[in-house]
Structure formats: structure tokens, C-alpha cells
Length: 100
Image (cartoon, rainbow, N blue to C red; front, side, top):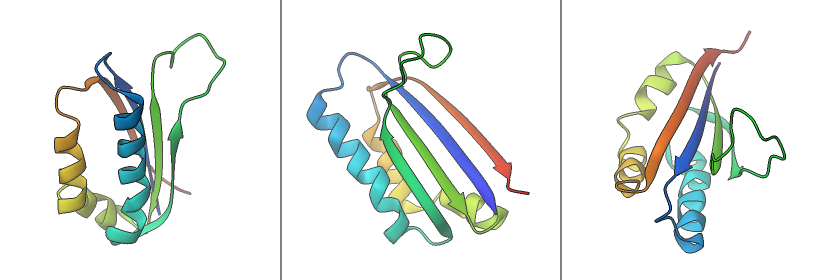
């Protein structure tokens, strides 16, 4: 299995309504994209003041295998989500690793 972690930092143009819309889209991936074993996403509520400060949403997806992770990137549902981020992002952090 492979783990896919993403942290999104949005700019000031992100409204609470748009944030909820994006979160709902992320949560819908499991039912729409093959190869997803587990998925969680949420609004960052950390009380830490270093490193991840300012990151708004977090996403964790567990894929069946590396091939499922590779198929996820170009999947139409994922690409629609990526397009919906236009003009909203300051930064994104991504980490992918095998689960051992």
C-alpha cells in the first residue's frame, strides 16, 4: 500500500463556503477514484505555531499500491479538483511513501 499526504495553504481569497466545498470534494474521492483503501481530510486545527502554520486543509489517502497512486493523478475527478484550486493556493506540500 501507498500513503499520499497533502497539506494545502490557501490565500486570503478563500471563503469559508469555498473551503467547505473543497473539503467535500476531497472526501468524495473515495467513492469515485479506484484504488483508494482509506481517505481522511479536514480543516487544520493545530495549536502548533511552527512549521505547518497557515496550512488550511489536510488530506491523507491510502492506496492499494503504487499503480493506484499513479492512476490517481490523471484521474478526471482529481483533475477537476486541481482545476478548482486555480487562484486560491499559496502552497501545497505532498508526501508519498510505501506503507511497510
